[in-house]
Structure formats: structure tokens, C-alpha cells
Image 1: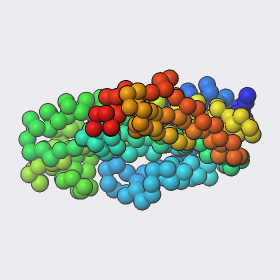
Image 2: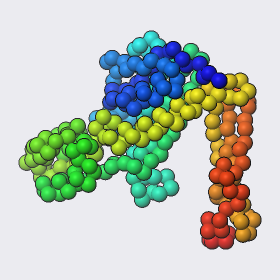
Image 3: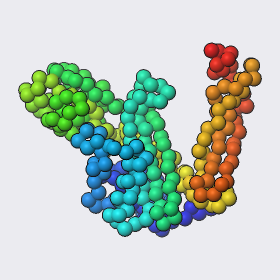
Image 4: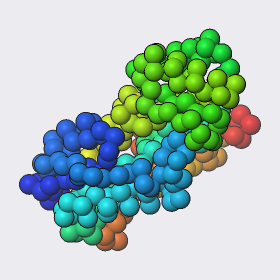
Length: 281
């Protein structure tokens, strides 16, 4: 069943080279020709380094990126991503990268959204006083293959230098800040073009998006049919009571009222008592 994207131009709303991982997948799965808009400035909607505060949630920001990119090009099909970094929602002690990817088709009034949360990230920052402290931090976060940002203090844009990718660059910026402030704040540059680890998470999210875009509703054939809800309550094998493990997945169409429930997505119809809050509180 065709998803109806073939032969169209897909605008990738980025200024940070995300097309390098998104375009090959989009062209393969959707049959589109990809384009990156000239003079597109996603930094106007917020920056990781704090010069411009992001005022909208990630999905709204991605949607705004798409709309602005489509306005610049006159096209009707776009993709945008927006990343967030912070504690993992379940493993809160570990940093995580969440990527929201949105495909927007204004010709069909269609949106397809996926989210990918990954523990694969070098996201970190630290106040450093000595060159030795700086070098230790830099090596830990995979510098120089991954870029760094220096500034006078955490949350400050004073003395800000972004996209540092060589030791001479980094040390010169550090010495300048220490001379004027006595210390510096170093943080990972999370822009995709300076962060290969994040770029791979975007690629994984793009794969999910392509799979979703090419899955059509069994009833009305609208693209984007997929899981919208995980229903918990897989019964414990020992006591039979409900656990927090997923019992079924519900998929829904965003255009018509068709829904489908798939029971026991993991294959098992009961859960190990180890994961039962009644048997193993």
C-alpha cells in the first residue's frame, strides 16, 4: 500500500546537518527528493547554549521549524527534529537524549510524530579552574570528535565560544576565560553537527519515523498508523495479579476512528514474579 509521498520534495528543517542521517532514509522509504532550505535559522527558536531561550515544548518547536522551512521553500512536506537533554524518565540518575521528529504534510493536513529516548549521550558540564581539570573533562566526553562550549559560568553567555573541536582552540579559549574570570564553565556542544552521538540518536528516530510514515491505517489508508498507548497489567505467573508490565499495545488512526489492540506484544502471557510488586514488593 502506497503512503502517497512518492515524487514529492521533502524539506528538512535544519541548519545543523541533520539531513546527513535523515535524507537517505526519507529517500529510501518515502520516495521523495530532499531539500534543505537556504537561510533557515532554527537558532531563532532556541539554543542549547542559552543565547536564545526555547519558549515552546519540543513538539511545538519542531512544528514551528517545519512551518518556517515550508514557508521559505513553498513546499508542502517537511521534517523537523528537536532534542532535549536531562535525567532519563525512569533511570533518573543517568543523562538521556530525547529526540522528537515530526513529519508535516500540509497538503493532506497530516502530522506524524515519533519520540526516541536514549541513554547514549555525552551530555555534561562542569566548572573548571585548571587546564588539567579541563583536559580530564574533555576526554571523558569524547573531545575532540565531539565539540565543546566554553563560557564564564553555568547559564552565562559571557565569553561564550561554541563549536570548539581542537585542543589549541579549546586551550586558548580556556586561558582567556581564566585570565578574566578565574575559572570557566565547559559543556558539551549538543548541536547535531558537533555531536556524532546525538546524530546517531536522530538517525534512530528517523528510522522509526519512516516506518511509521509507511504504515497506513487498515480502514482509511492514512499514513502514520501506529502505537498510541501501552496498556499495563500483564498478570504475574505466580499470583495472577496485574503487574506494571505491558499487556497490550493500542494503535490508532489520527484521521478516522479505527483502533487496534495487540495483546502480549512481548510474546509472554504472564510476567516473572521478580517483576511483580505483590510477590516482590
